[in-house]
Length: 338
Length: 171
Image (cartoon, rainbow over all chains, first blue to last red; front, side):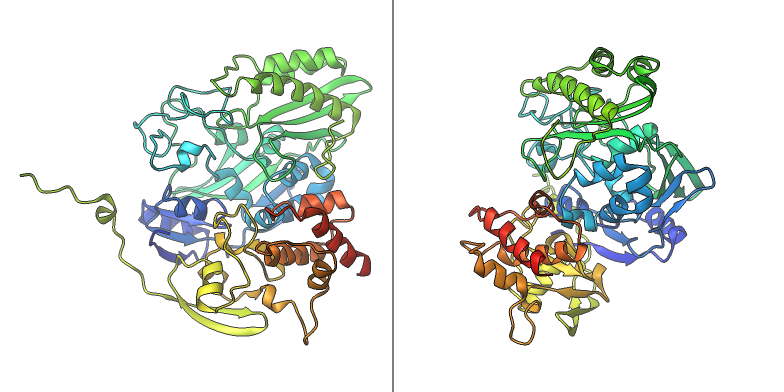
């Protein structure tokens, strides 16, 4: 691995001071993605600022009826926390669909948001990549792109965001709390991750001198009618080809509220308010689900090896909405899709 | 002739920092090590403490061969910086047997022939110890899912699940 300096942050303000003082420094918490990228020399920080001992590891109810999750809560602890498992089971399910038990024990909530794409070319420093080295070109557009994006792509980058947890957070309309030199600010989840455009080196709208301190969930948890359906090349411990977070509020068979987000298909968790609006007031049936799938996949574009994802996503959306409406969420241990 | 362009790695050279003193309790023994910050827990265990039971497989967190318990939780030691675990209690495969008696998981792996080449086995057993401590797996499906971070290229999976079930049945 590369050589680097190491320092511990004493508190959040100290962490912000340290990162502002060294533009080539990086924060480290769980390290599950960063250390891997450093071994590949994709990331070459001059200094690691260890934030893992900061007191950002609480899960607590907010005055507004929601839940605030500290940025350093490990993924496994979050998935099994009673407030999450009972009130936001779609989030628990999405977390448990990702990575392995060991990695979930290590990875932090904030770090999950900030993990980088697993595009093969991003990882291979011998190949051009606009995300890794702006202006060098995209090797995936005309390369092996079976895992790549079908929505919101640009000529510069067709990478996907790899997180499962973030797909559920998008559907729940979470908020990201960050601290920087100017104090704290809140970023709506939909505004946190970016589309690649012509600046694919920027994954998020977090500034270089800011730190994620917490995630806030609104009161609405969709605990009764939800699912997280993940389709991948093997049954466990693989990134999504397509995943769907579907959450509904039903009045009998009529849909009062709907949330729908996709993973594995874009540079950020993919939502479209038009797709969700198309479900409101409709009967929960295959016809309304199929219309929502059409709306959510509007503008989808395949590349040489991933065109299959468009049909796969369409069917997965319909199946996920059926699972959610029937109150039969996808099990993340028994892999049978019903 | 123009002077040769310096090689990129020389241009971004970072001064080598002093080694950092790290205290760990490994398998019940207090140890103090002076480590470069980029030393992984895996390399510290194998190369500095000569605890070579923990295996380096992929070295990228994908195979689980380097699984150990840190403060009772299973993690992959290849993606863990040793300096970040200063003050922690580490249990490796060498620390599972007690008073000359194999750990029940070790005995169960023998009983069920739950390995062939054996390279993944220390990680499998440490991971299974973590799984038992978590107490969330009840069914074979749940064991398979929660052990999916440990790859066995010999394909001993059915016997690994049977070995874990044997220990779960006795605990």
